[in-house]
Amino acid sequence: MDGGFDIERARKETRGCEQRIHFNNAGASLMPAPVADSLHAYLREEEESGGYETMDRRAEDLGTFYVAAARLLNCTADEIAFADSATRAWNAAFYAFELKPGDQVLAGSAEYGSNLVAMLHRAKRTGAEIVWVPNDTLGRIDVAALERLITPRVRMICLTHSPSGDGLINPAADVGMRARAAGIPYLLDACQSIGQLPLDVETLGCDILCGTGRKYLRGPRGTGLLYVRQRLLDQLEPNQLNHHAAELSSTSSYRLRQDAKRFECWERNYAGQVALGVAIDYALGWGLARIEARVKTLAVELRRQLAETGGIRVGDQGDEKSGIVTFFSDRNPSAELHRKLRGHNINTSTVPFSANPVIAAQRQLPEMVRASLHYYNTFEEVDRFVDNLQKLL
Ligand SMILES: Cc1ncc(COP(=O)(O)O)c(C=O)c1O
Image 1: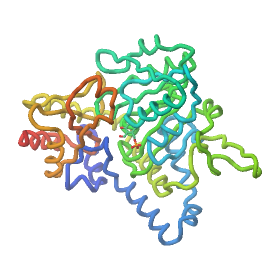
Image 2 (image 1 turned 90 degrees about the horizontal axis):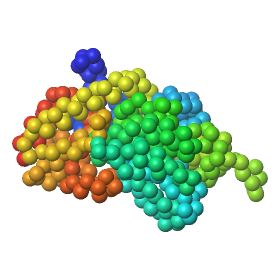
Image 3 (image 1 turned 30 degrees about the vertical axis):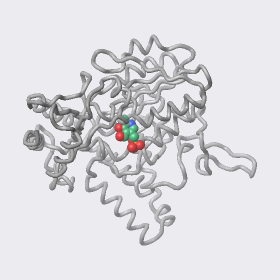
Image 4 (image 1 turned 90 degrees about the vertical axis):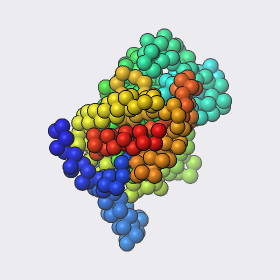
């Protein structure tokens, strides 16, 4: 036990953590054994008895994903779609909104680079305008400024809850209150917060939420999810359709599905869908509030030790901070530190411009190292990490 947290069990069920310090959970977490085992077992069944036959036999397990995701987010299973990444989920929803010249999309500066590309793409094609909501002095979206920017021209509000390359957590629920009051659809990118923080779409007030499987949810790569509020679902026709999203009633007509699966494709990563369901149930078993508390405590300790290390500057903004810890050295390029740490079996990543380009352009900081912690990491690993880092400076 570590502060009431069963760290022995968490590590025993994380086979990869014995050989390395894995501080790249915001990239892709180490899968826990039950998740990896379920993925392997499904693939073995496909190998032995065929993909379609396995799909039929495992229909209940495939359905478990929707039920688990609905429990995680406090919505109904019909409001959940499986996606193969957060990007696919976000794009599927974003491109479904009709935009015309003069329309505005309000966005926070934490937006992920891929979302920004899609926004620029649509602005170019439709004549709509992307309006960046200013930050407050702590780097969070300024909710009062957002409120002032709301006019009849605003078609949607986009926010990244927790950016890819910054420990910042945006006040997503405050934004949700303003969006609801104004009746404007609210799209929340929860890619880094899902699995790390408790997320309740009613409290958050978001109409759409996207997440990925492989990061804090500890699912496999190539998995993600999309939540769409039923009320909005009725109004959103996906930009691309297929014969799973819509039913052909004749050769000249189709009927859209009523649920969020209208954003899915029939052919998808079935093994991944089952394993993501297991990962979500596994996270729920630990409890999201307990996960959040442990992740935040570990990150606070890492930031404290980094701040006391000469020549290191911590980059994270906000008051409430996530398990993502960013820093840079006065002397050593971040790419070099990242590479050398990897040589010592310590996994981190760097923060490219494309992670959160608007923040990067605003802050003009050098490239940073990102050390992202999860609950199965330990305080002893934090000490060893800082020790190794100091030797590289
Ligand atoms: C905030 C944020 N949004 C979206 C994404 C995209 O996720 P995916 O790679 O699953 O499409 C990432 C990935 O790093 C991210 O950090």
